[in-house]
Image (tube, rainbow, N blue to C red; front, side, top):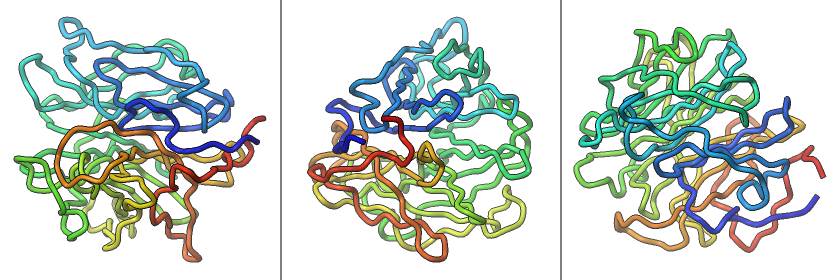
Length: 320
């Protein structure tokens, strides 16, 4: 297996989502790509943006489907009906700034096939960064960053892969010093970019704190402690960050997680920047991936990004 280095490409690739589908034998990747949804695929994780295939699968059509402007942070999850769904956000009006959630549906079970606009599940909700969990009982839940003075993480039950239920709860807001370093202007505090991670009997939400264009953007951990998933008391936020800047990589955050082809390893895809800054100045964010370790109790361990000089061995079970 050929080793590779981070970042995986020399172009802007913020808010990355990666997954491996055993049915097709491909890794798939999406990220914030402007005013379209573009999907990348490859047999090899380390070169998914350099030698794989890509195709634009959806472009907003304001007059037809009511989606305008830039699309943020798409994620692709398989529904309980076997189809794939992309959960993301855009504006519902060309003159407005607040983002609203929308969903795109695959035509077949092949993620590289055709897609179509499905629905706007919560037209009155100002929210970004949706992610989806299929629980052990088969029920699905969505977690997103709700904008209400600050950015809060809210979890909501789903009736089906494209319809939201009524029950919801805010489960996290920025509260620790390390996630209150430098908010955006007009936003008091930020928790965003959530992603569900299951390891053994434990269920976590990995999320991002601080402004994405500062070096202090980082990952934190919320853990399910039992009970109704749509109750705030069922979740505990841990008081230490999971991943912070280091080894020449700054602002590591907005992560997604995927398993190796043989199912024995968990990997993290996140974006990072090349220079330290305290200011909220937009700068290119690059796709990095690295393996996640766990301590004896089953809690995730990451620490700092892998430096760009380090060789990375591909995920276990990857095709030659």
